[in-house]
Amino acid sequence: MGRQVSTEIVKTPLIWYKKASPLTAISLLSRTGLNQSNKHIMHSKKRILVTGGAGFLGSHLCGRLVAQGHDVICVDNFFTGSKENIAGLSDKNNFELMRHDVTFPLYVEVDEIYNLACPASPIHYQHDPVQTTKTSVHGAINMLGLAKRTGAKIFQASTSEVYGDPQVHPQTEDYWGHVNPIGQRSCYDEGKRCAETLFFDYHRQHQLRIKVARIFNTYGPNMHPNDGRVVSNFIMQALRNEPITIFGDGSQTRSFCYVDDLIDGIVMLMDTDDEVTGPINLGNPHEFTIRELAEKVIELTQSSSSLVLHPLPSDDPVQRQPNIGYAKSKLHWEPKIQLEEGLYKAIQYFKKML
Ligand code: NAD
Ligand code: UDP
Image (tube, rainbow, N blue to C red):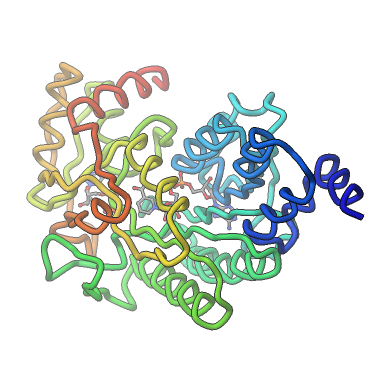
């Protein structure tokens, strides 16, 4: 019997993706007589689902997990993501791409789920707001159901938008936020808030292992050049020597995190002990006005662009800055790449998009 189990584990790693907890898996391995280094390989190689994997953050996360040797399934409906973002992974035999909309149930066998599917740029999430709410809420229900059936650990890409237009500054995780429930941003903000509720209810009710990160503005390569977010807009405008479109008077603030730092934080959070559920802020705490960002981009691109003022979109938060004390203490994580260095890397990427 012991030998049969051993053979099946080696030949059919799928057994790992059934309900077996890591502890069960270890005890199965110890019965197989596999040596220590094999144990390490089998224990550390996981089958991982990344939803929204062809998007900006998802593509970097897939790249990181594939490089670590995991079997990665990337699920995306290509609403804002693209095959180009993951083109470099398509020939890897531990990477699989699946076109699928997370508002519909998904049946795969996995150990971990990173739920990132959702448009993140205001112009895109406001394009079809009902679908945006469905993606956050139905998507969360479907992925949590999948996690419940498979016993997988599940990460949720939540957002600083759950704080709305914050009245507490910088934002700490215990702040409940100041959110308009019926405005143009609500489909995203309230969808993400409801997804957090679902994650914590599945955790309390069904003992799911959850990891919820509140991600603050992140930028870098693989952002869509016409994505509409401020960093990609400003860089593309500066590289074309076109006017830089500042919404409002540019005194509103954001704190910008370079993508590599963020991916470090996400992966570190997933690797924490089960009692660490979040929510946990992930972002760069250095705060800049939007005008300062525009001036920095012009300087780094040596652009002749001028600044033009456009009306401020409704409910646009006045200030945003993460308090990352909790991430520092729990994950021993903090961003390493500051704005100038990160912008420089992003500019090199966007130059190729011209
Ligand atoms: P993105 O738009 O580049 O990526 C989102 C991906 O999800 C895209 O590939 C898109 O096609 C896919 N998607 C959308 N709806 C889907 C659906 N119904 N089914 C399957 N796939 C779907 O955005 P991003 O910046 O990579 O953001 C990824 C996640 O991180 C999002 O959940 C977003 O809310 C969150 N987030 C991002 C930031 C940021 O600054 N980048 C900040 C806070 C939170
Ligand atoms: N913004 C801007 N010009 C642009 C795009 C955005 O001034 O071309 C502003 C926007 O009004 C907001 C900030 O930049 O105050 C960040 O916008 P983004 O859409 O990147 O993210 P979010 O508002 O979701 O933080």
